Image (cartoon, rainbow, N blue to C red; front, side, top):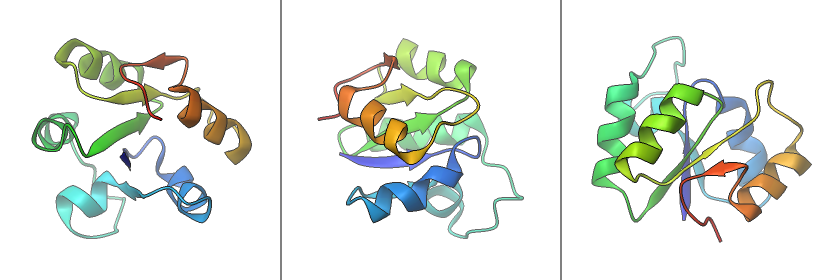
Length: 105
């Protein structure tokens, strides 16, 4: 499973890649650039997940977006806010997270 992170969690993308996970920002995957000053709407993230349901899982600290994903059956892991260090992120990703809508293994 590949990971997509929204603006609340984009700081973890690099650390996950450094630990062997495929992870990209919503800004890059949806808007096609890396300027995170331009917000990707939750609606666009949800549509991306709908189109890539079997390919990508969302990692987010946004409780409302994580809840919306759960309601739609989209793969997502809600992360704590503030974000913990990379070791805790890796543990949450392996375990599916405290409020996961799917199994990430």
